[in-house]
Amino acid sequence: MKTIAKTGNEAMAYAMKQINPDVVAAYPITPATEIVQIFSNYVADGEVDTEFVAVESEHSALSACVGASIAGGRVMTSTSSQGLALMHEILYIAAGNRLPIVIALVNRSLSAPINIHCDHSDTMGSREAGWMQLYCANSQEAYDSLIIALKVAEQTAVPAIVSTDAFIISHAMERLEVLEDEEVQRFIGEYKPRFSALDLENPKTFGPLDLQDYFFEHKRAQIDDFSKVLGTYNKVAQEYAELSGRYYPALEEYKTDDADVAIFTAGSTADTAKEVVDGLREQGRKVGLVRMRMWRPLPVEEIKAALGKFKAVAVMDRSDTMADFGGPVFLETRGILYDAKKKPLLTDYVYGLGGRNIDISDILRVYDEIEQVAKQGKIDKLITYLGVRGEE
Image (tube, rainbow, N blue to C red; front, side):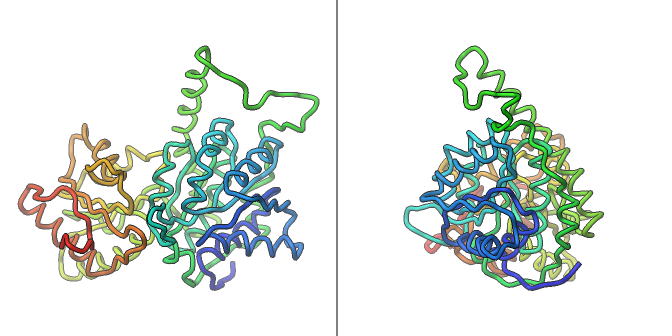
């Protein structure tokens, strides 16, 4: 294993190089442009065998990926924000056809107004498309997760999105430990597609009409298979830990054993929150952190077990639902805990939309307020828009 310095985008491109997919189809979009730009250099320099398909839109990029995957290829792409939104129609087609495509995604706000910085609106808006979703906290995790996700996707026939926070991770240089090319190839193994449109001896139909007679049964079967992804993920993550020494659970707990309160969050904010937890622990305050790493499929029992032991929990959402009832992570967490025997007081902080910075003082404030909630035994304010001018 060697140590190098790379940004999040460079780390994702490097993992793609070591995976050496058969096809990458892409249309660049800020801030994910670098991923396919760097990867195209690997193609041009002959460092990979990949067929690189440059197209005129993200809709075409994922459509080309679907075609290549149906043909039996190992397929990847990259996008962000409006690009993922433009792929939205094809996301469902890829998932419904059980195509294990992997997207290296950089989380960015959705227009309007136009904004190129980080929030989770793009992936949260596509969370029901039938794709596994992993949220990374740093560049090391982005590199590792892309390799893990590819193997899980191919074993389960469920496509995967691995995301990083725009500019916070995508463009920040970090120390990175990487595997040798041969180790990555041994770990992911040779791709053996379940079917191929190029198999002329065993012709199949792809994308048929499926009306009232069988559509429901086919969707039910897809949902049933999707629910099994978590089990496969846990197994593959453990295999990767044995290879690399780095283990990534679907849900991470940090200093929660004796904690009274916790923050539940995702992405790069989790690493910042760990620094705050360490400082507060030195003051004797019983605080912890739970990090959402896999959001689709939902690790329901893990979330229930992790959050059920606290007196109060502050969910931190980097997107909103426009439901006037909190962000998506808050709403779904509330649903998970509804019938739990032990459940905390739950409040939501919507933060960081459009890349607004979240710093140590913001997270300290959240811990101060959630400790007060636990002390009072009641919630005064269910939803807080953290850092919005005019609401402080």
